[in-house]
Length: 191
Image (cartoon, rainbow, N blue to C red; front, side, top):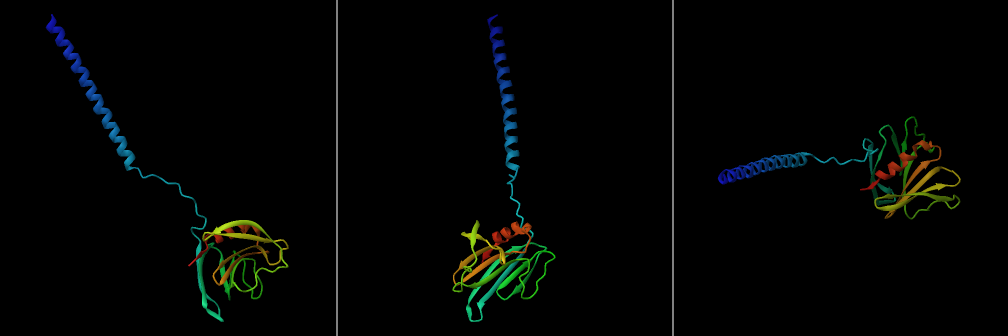
């Protein structure tokens, strides 16, 4: 009887080994399939919505003045698709829908002026307070607000070499365009 008992033990051990082998192969196949699925997937990186993505680009390159043709400035910025612009000398007016430019009158607009850095700075009779700071071209730029609204609601200046670029939000422009002012500033680049 001993040989039969030994035979049964061998058969049991063989069946257990076979079952372990089949189970191992099954789990190994599942593991490989799951790795292949992970490898095939392209990770989705959440993107931040850019509100200026479909805006128009404005690029300018001009001499600072006829008396200083050697000093040129060049920059670009973006402005809303439904806005227009009007250049008048060293000032460019960006006009929201429904607004128009009338000569010798500051329109309801966001405008950019360029001046010689040696020219007079902000008028001393107007008091300004800093209401916000933004980064433009890795420079911290202060957004100023005139305490007595004269011609502007907000003002920001960037000095670059021999010239100053001044961004102005006109006092008569509706405050619903505040965000557009900051977004235009955020797209500004020296070229």
